[in-house]
Image (cartoon, rainbow, N blue to C red):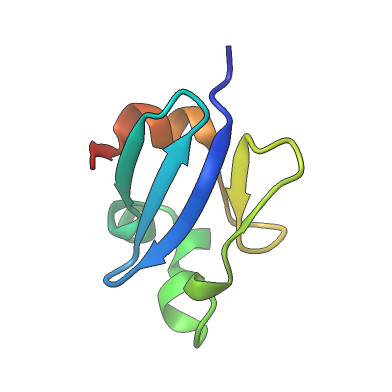
Length: 82
């Protein structure tokens, strides 16, 4: 089953605080993605883009624009327990 996101918050230093429907909470550090994925570099290069993160209607993906998104299962698996 794909984990669904209940709450999403932007934290300093390119991190996201995420709570899932099952109560699991993580801090996901986006800096590694920014360093390794070319499309994610815009999150540092475009002023205030990182703070514009949104949750899709299915609550299984966060996104910034048409090219930059993160699946909830990735956040669930690789986020650090909060």
